Image (cartoon, rainbow, N blue to C red; front, side, top):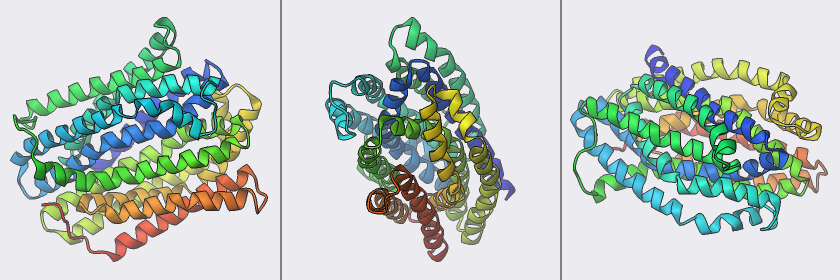
Length: 429
């Protein structure tokens, strides 16, 4: 348990710090009015897709580097990093192709192309798409640090970037006159800075990239591991676009509630991702060393640690839901709607922990396809379940929030059950 904790606690701190990005942006955007909050809430689904595209390289590099360390082949890591950077460049180019689709995205959510929400959200999202390459590069460099088990360095780099993000937000939003897009550009800039710092630190350790062109086999291995994990998240965001149209049918205020709610939920979510990283690192290293028993024990130890963290967080968010929303929103109707959403979701945060830990176990093994299907199908089930509960069952917006909570619980149980009953043999060589 001690080894898992030593890798996990800095990642938990990183998760909470990254929540600082989101909450800082949300606070400053909230000063622009509730329309701006609604716009960022709508843009959040596409923003996560961009982030997850960038994570394809980072996740693949993380798993492969961890197994290289376990097998005593640390000298291979520079080559793995180089191929990860080629993947990052490819995903950045793919993201740029999405720029013309930004207006259509808001139309899919139920907003007219010329509406105030579409205009504000489009400015925010376009800036994020143009800077998607920064997310990808930062993820790959961070993936190497996670793979070698040095999460403290990444934590301190994140501290620096979070502080700078908080300083840049008001400068870009008001002083530079960029408005809501300024918050997006601040996040892009600090991701560029993070990538530069992490890359420089790796080079000083002799683990920097090597002069090497794209290698089909190396890229394929990274994508095979990273794509299912990111694909699961992308499917999650894509399904939320459909749910978003249902949600807006109950009023724009519900979308604002969801947008701010997701930012607050990022506290337990990103903390659980920290434990997920610890799990995948230790499972990967033990599998690389051929010790399957310790790999399984690492996953179970991580689950205990994650649950010990998640339970008090869940209670806190349930009890203080309204005061938390009052920090970010101005309208009483938005605060009440958001508190209602958050209280329903906080009940199932422990199942979020289950899903994250066993996702980490699958990633450490380099066998991420089962996790993809559980995540994708479980999230897709929200659409018919939400429609059923909201309209035929007459529960309205509460039915949609319950559908999200029920599917979260189901995914956690399914992920744990599949992982515990499957072999822990690794597939990444």
